[in-house]
Image 1 (tube, rainbow, N blue to C red):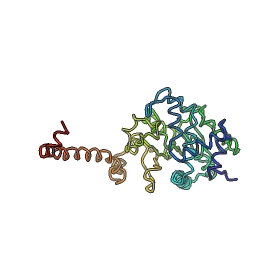
Image 2: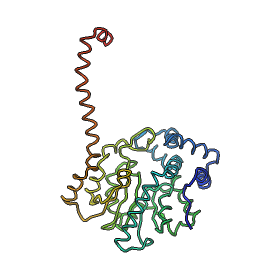
Image 3: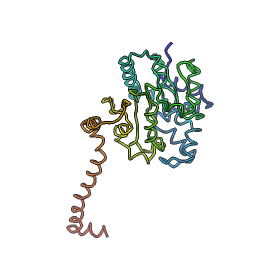
Image 4: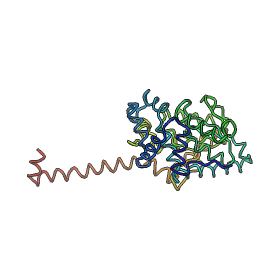
Length: 317
């Protein structure tokens, strides 16, 4: 039996009502506001819990545990075709991995790292896989996912819950899938090292990140991680995971990294000769240079205008 996942507005409303203690009218309002303005619910949670946007502290930790906003944001976003394309492409890569390694789908060990409401987990289950699910234990989002899994009869069967993060760090997984998680973490470099520790040699990490999206509608994306934007492939290679494939349709969403014994000059050379990797790596530097040049070449014009137009000079004073 196929599990229905987020197929319509009413279906999403019903799931949130059924798997939370929120009243139906409140859910309908909050979901409609999320449709009108992406990130509305998390922004409201940010006000409620008094967080400083883009700065991790105790208040933001409380938001993650007690807020409902991420349920609305992630469940609705998953329903969009461009977001579903990420997991469809990941499925293609997982299927290729099973074929090349001659492993039946139900024998592939998959860790869903930060799957929130569990939509990606359910999608893979619909395609014959079993998964281990990890998110923030005890959070509203985690509880929502558990109830979804229970309702569909997959909890303890096709889905196993991981409550102790350290259980993951035993090099037991063929696949680690983590979409839009790293930008929320206080130490994403350690998280990348941990992903290496989760994977078997030759295993795959399927990753997306939003390091560069530090915006009003994502108050939980950390400013401290902005420096990692456009460097993901190099960060993974330093931790013995080679960029082996990435989506070109929605660029780098997702990326695939293959766990290797050690990085080589050839691996680094491949990155430096990949036009897309290099283009995004240098993009912030190019933007900064253009802005600087614009200031340099605009300044003489302003000076000349001040000297040639007395009224401008007077107003400037």
